[in-house]
Amino acid sequence: MSDQENIVDEELDLDEGSQIPQKKGPFLSPLIIRILLIVALFIVITLIAIIVFIVGSKFVSPVGIRTRVDEWGEDVHRPKTMHLEYIVLENPFRQQLLDGKMIQLKITLAYKAKDKKLQQEISSIIPEIRDIIIKHLSRLRSDDFTDISGTSLEKLEDDFLKQINRILNNGKIERILFQEYTLM
Image: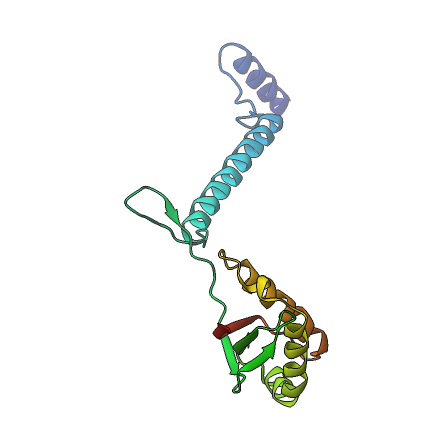
């Protein structure tokens, strides 16, 4: 019985004032840990988004038309330049108008640069282009060319462009330039 007495004595000794070390749980509950992890994740994602936005706005700047303010404070915008190549129709057009007066025009055709198919096509149909221009001129009067504002030449250019571009297959004429214009 000595073993049993020892066990009973030990139980009595513990009850009298000494404490048994108790097993403690985690410092924070699992619910609080999950909430803290979600908040930390939200903060990290927000910081990453802010950094990406700042870096992106520094490297990707809008590319636009640069303007220069002149002395009157107006912005000057320059349109994009279209580079053209030209075919000069060598012989000037001399045509009698409906009212008996004569007109002489020297014309240059402009098309987009490096369009070799169109250049070859234009070179091969120059007689047809000359025919279109002569027929159109023969239907006009001298009054059609006396407009001071210059709109008559713009209208004539538009008419020539429409008629010539109808017969082209590999592109189109962008502009018609009048090199010489004489009304006799």
